[in-house]
Length: 233
Image (cartoon, rainbow, N blue to C red; front, side, top):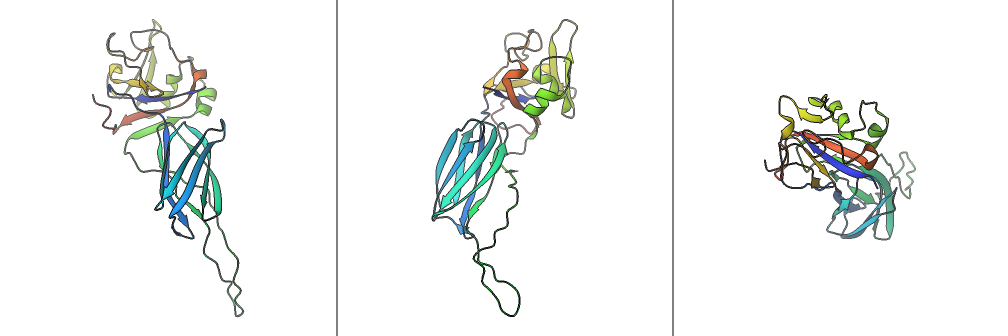
């Protein structure tokens, strides 16, 4: 299966970061907070499901691998569904609702309609972090041209990030005027920091080769500033 990666630039953290995504928000029934409801997230590619019970209107579905999901909500015998896509390490807000207020037609002889439902594509809002991050999608990894098979080369599509290849075959990723030793890479939440050889990233800097070929990477996130507190150094 494809791996998820997080590339942190400008710091040297010692703790791992989860690459799983979270979807959270409010559930309403006829525009009022749902007292009881069930929310299920189904991965459209793998069939993986996560189900949570809702009380007092709030829900949170965590531990989601990056990808596209169908979100089903059931409350008071009513159901609704919508599709969303979450990215590596993302915590997104998505409010859900079932039912609706009855509408009345205009005119002298008013007629009460059973229901009028207006739907718009869901908008995921990132509200849990102020980090400055850019996502590199699987489509970009598979289709953008580059000189090497190193998936990190695409990090230089992010403003102020440089990927360089030395004459001896080693590669470096850095941002601005900082040293490449201040860069860290997480693969599925596991740090690839090399604290033995000059502090670089394993497979980059003073060590040659790349233990993770591009075909093994699903997508990754490049964080250039406003890191979370878990990035300790």
